[in-house]
View 1 (tube, rainbow, N blue to C red):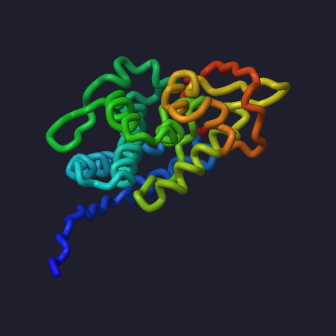
View 2 (view 1 turned 90 degrees about the vertical axis):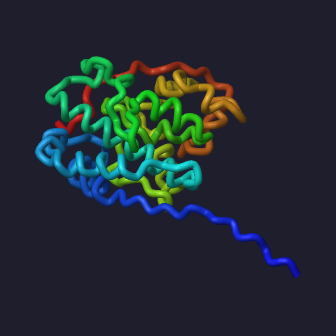
Length: 227
């Protein structure tokens, strides 16, 4: 009997505990951020980003490990961008905020834009849009817990449910779906297999008629800071 050929599967173990501790300390349950607290704890934030730099993903990482790496990297880098320019009223007041290549991964540098559009959006997981945070009030809230490979499905579902049912970001009333502009900007990500409302409905506490009129709410780019 011919023995079965062994297949080597890479086992990665990325420690996101430093980021998890920082989130628990400086982000409240509503996703509001204590940026001054982060500023006073900058050494730990930079230590985490340096750690991720040294743990550059390889092609044999499993999907959830990659998702956790890049979601946490995006969120931690966004916080650092704000802190480096603090005080600021909006991320949009920071020049070249999304396109500047300053985030180190291995021996290369990348941008927030590239992490979102060239990595995360290409991983066939539209819920990443509710997991990454752009430091603004209309964005999906920054969870005060780090993503991990093991918690990925649970946290992606939580982030999506929280966002679509948040009346400050999406409203469903009087036969109209007033949606976040995230659903307009990235509509193609959500409608590969269904209509937009068919995608949203399974996450709604009170599902709506998929034929209702869709409107898009104004986007509030002011800093998601603890008041």
